[in-house]
Length: 447
Ligand SMILES: Nc1nc2c(ncn2[C@@H]2O[C@H](COP(=O)(O)OP(=O)(O)OP(=O)(O)O)[C@@H](O)[C@H]2O)c(=O)[nH]1
Ligand SMILES: [Mg+2]
Image (cartoon, rainbow, N blue to C red; front, side, top):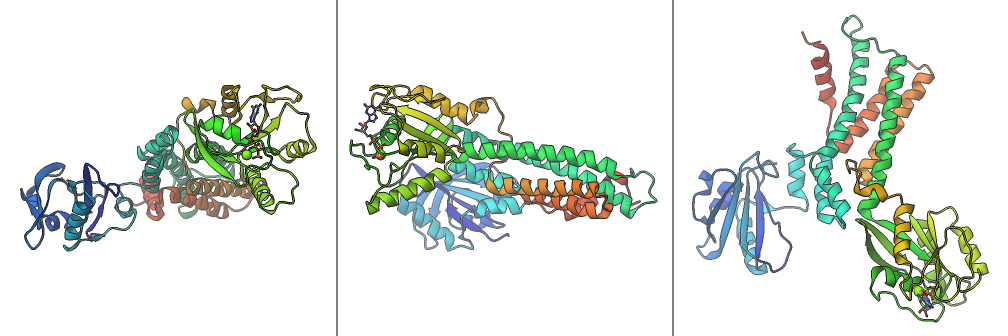
């Protein structure tokens, strides 16, 4: 772990400055070998020094500012040097090349964060939040990532972990030390309500986490309808850009066209599709197959109807096909005439940009995302974390089933422990020893 690693930490390209980060046991003294300026090995932590990088054969490579961070007070919890070079691609690369001639190797992607995790500086949730922060596409996603980084999300999991651990510890004491007086007798009547309460907490966490995931990743929204109703016109109107081709010829759109739309801090991944109808045209029919696939995948469907005409057989088929999806019915071409009466139909004109605000409001309320602004984002946000909580919940449900079937307590303990490990996995912690620690700290059994 103490091997020195280095990488350019700023984006590739020409800029005002670039930063090269070096981390490892002898990072400071190694870099000091090619640094002309104050002796970095004597520099205090969190100080910045001015000097020059001099190649091993004596040439000046760049004028730099060097920040020194000493273990454990650095991102990786190791000695770290951050070298701010002049931002050119060549100059930065030549400084990095010189650093790599020292006892320093090139870092792998994510290796600095991995070290922070392995050195116990951050847990897995925080490590994943670092990536989320970098990749955040909207303000809500940024908020979620920052909460993950600020340990709030981890604390939430730690609290649940401690509740499960508490149950395990009490049961273990009963099994292993039946003669020990202080230990509360853990009958199934005592375990059951606590397990039920934990299941409810897991459920709440799963529900909010899945919503958070939607906010973070964007909501896949398919714009569908028969040909020529104005799907592409709607896409263009929503994103205020001429992205999709619009003509009065049926079957204009042949392939899926994707665009992102930010709606009150939430991202919609809009997908304009080929109009659905029976056709002998090979290209069009491939496009239509893709439309049907897009409907299946979509988390929200915008079904566009041309309300200047009566419902057609194709419209009715699409209404039937999407009846179980989260969907919004849109009556386009409101400027012409209104020949369709349908419950919940939002009347718009894409061509004349009428009714779009009402449509946007409807989308937000359909996704019940109105409370986003006020709700705190103290929840998990990625697939791995959510699937672990689901595992923890399933094991806890087995605990309750076991109790109802009057299984022996040591079998119930197996399910409880499984639930516990799923939670521990979220943080990437191994708790083998902490169960024992908890036992001893709670009951002083070591005396
Ligand atoms: N009057 C009127 N015409 C519209 C409106 N919206 C779209 N159109 C026209 O309807 C025609 C078809 O529009 P598109 O957006 O290409 O329709 P589409 O549903 O994407 O069609 P396909 O790609 O063929 O499936 C174009 O001539 C548009 O200008 C509207 O609100 N009012
Ligand atoms: Mg189209």
